[in-house]
Amino acid sequence: MAAAVKELTVKEKLEQLYKLQKVDSKLDEIKIMKGELPMEVSDLEDDIAGLNTREAKLKEIIADLDHEINQHNHNIKDSEAQILRYKQQLDNVKNNREYDALNKEVDYQNLEIQLSEKKIRKSTEEKGTKEESLKLISDKIAIRAKDLEAKKAELASIIEKTEKEEEKLIKESDKKRKDIESRLLKAYDKIRGSYRNGLAVVPIARQSCGGCYNQIPPQVQIEIGVMKNIIACEHCGRILVDEQFIND
Ligand SMILES: [Zn+2]
Image (cartoon, rainbow, N blue to C red; front, side):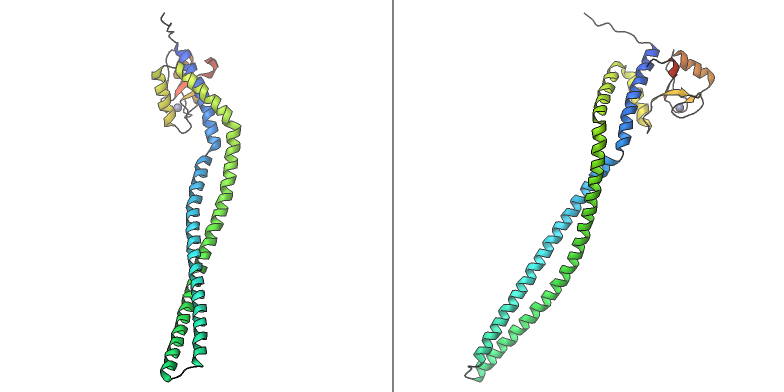
């Protein structure tokens, strides 16, 4: 049994398109409400991830410097212990050769101490610089994290309020699209996609196009009203309807 294909009148086609437009416009409104928030949230997340990597790297460098400084302090203590031992041995030297050899060792350990002290100063200075950078980055992370938290909360509250409505509208839009002939739907999508406000079907308002606000000649207004043909605005190409003759 073949399904009966009912040929729609132009009026019915226009009504379908206009109803679809109303649903799609409501979806657009929700999108506008969310605005740039989803993008801003993901940008902030990327930003924080990058800063966290830099923070971890700096902490690693500081730990390495600490390790180096500890190592040098340890070396100094070793040298000092050595010197103490040599000095005790100096009290019991038997000849000049032994005396000179011990004094040379003491001089050598003193040089080692100076070298370690120099390296400690250098590493401590470098550590200070790295700690300053670390503080700047940690502060930045804290600020971004706070910002992110606020934006996420704002977005979550909008989503919570609009989620059900959006779901319902998407279903409604899909359902309406199924009843519209593909040629018209293609035209509708094309016009809708070419305007930021997403309006493809607009009513006449004050004798003008509801999309671009250009005046519509009286003869064309009458043609729109009788709905024998689908009429597009000669200025912006949007499909025009006269709301007073359209059934909602
Ligand atoms: Zn127009």
